[in-house]
Length: 492
Image (cartoon, rainbow, N blue to C red; front, side, top):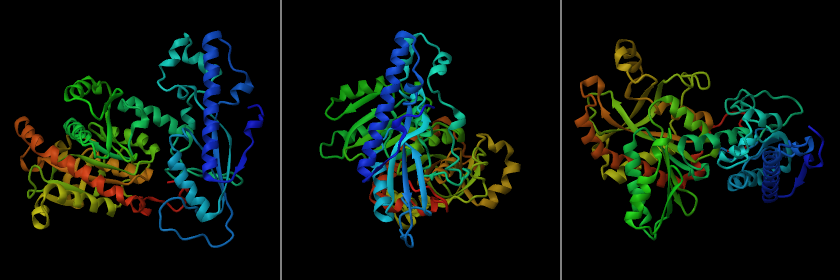
C-alpha cells in the first residue's frame, strides 16, 4: 500500500470532533472509490495505486493511561479493563453517531481517555460502496474483472473472534475497542437487506422475533391503528420491499400499500414501526429452525439493539398446561447444536431479571389477570430447543434429558436466540404460547390450530409490545453485566 499523508492519525479533543472526523473520512473514502468505479465502467481504466490507497475505512483509537485506581462504574459497558491503546475500524459513522457519542463520552469523561482518528489499512470492499448493488451492473464488467482492480469482500477477514473471545493479543498492538470491526458490520448490513427485504437503516432498536406469519398480520393491523393516533409516538410503518405507510393515509391507500408489499420474496421479512424519538419496534418473521435464528441474529447484532424478544409458539410438555397458556423461559436445554462450538451447551445462559419482570408485568397489563389466575396461564420454566422438528419420533432417546431438565416447553428457535444474545451481548428474553401438547395427545390439527391462532396471537403480541414499552425506561440497567466477559471490549 503506498504511503499517503491521509494515513496519519490525528488527535482530536472531543467525542463530537472524533465522530465528525470519522464521518468525513468515511464519506471521502466511499466517494473516492465510487468515482473510480464510475470511471472504470466508462473507460475501462483501473484506479492507480495511490487512488486505491484511499479506499479504506477510517479508524478510531482510544488511549487510556491509568494514573490512579480505575473508577468503579455500575454500568456494564463503556469501561476499560486496563490501560492501553484500543482501536477499531468504523463504517457508516453518520448512522452510528448517537451510539458512538454515547460510548465515547463515558470513556473520555470517566477515564480521561484521549482520542485519535485516521485511516486504517482495511479496504472497503467495492460491493459496499453502492446502496442497492444493481449499480454495478451498468458496466458490462464481471465480478472477476472488478476484483482485479478493486477491493473485494474477503471472508477470511470477516469473523467473530472478538465476540467469541478467540482473538489473540500481541504486544505493541491495539486491543479491540468494539465487538465488530467495519468489515464485519458492512457484511451484516448487506445481509440484512437480502434476508429481510428492508433497508438496514430501518431496523429499530427494539426487536421482536417470531416464527409465524400470523404475528405479522396482527403487528401490521396494530401498527396501522397506532398511526391513526395523532398524539401517539409512532410516525410511519415500513414494510418489506421498501413500502412506506405514513400517517394520514386513507384506509384504502393503506390497504393497497400492504397488499403491494413483496414480503414473500424474502426469507425473513421484517416490519418496522418508527417512533419520533428513534426508539421504534421491528418485527422479524424468522421462520422455523435454529439456522434461521442464528443467521438473522448474527446480522442484527451489529446494529447494537437494546434487546430482542422471541414471541412464538411452542409445544407444552406438562399435563397441567392448556392450549393458549404462556411459557416465560428462565432456562434453556439447548439441543439445537448450531452454536455448540461458540457457546457450548454446558455454558449456562442467565435469565435477565429486567426482561423477565417486564414480560410478567406486561402479561398482567394485557390479560388483566394476576396472582393465581395469572399463574394458571403463565408458567416459568425451561424450554427445550431442538434442531429436529420431528423429535417426537425419537422420544425414547429424548425422554431422560427432558425429565432431567424439568422442561415445560419445546420449540426450535428460543434457545438459539438466547444463546446469540448471550454471545453477542444483546439482552434477550422468551415468551412462548402453547399451541399443542405432543406428549399428551393434543397435537396440532388444522381446525383446532386455526381457532387457537385467532384467539391467542393478538394477546400474545400485545404482551411482547407492552414489555418493550416497559423496557424503554430501563435502558441503563437493561444492558446487564451478566453478558460481559472479563476482557470485554469497551464499546457496548
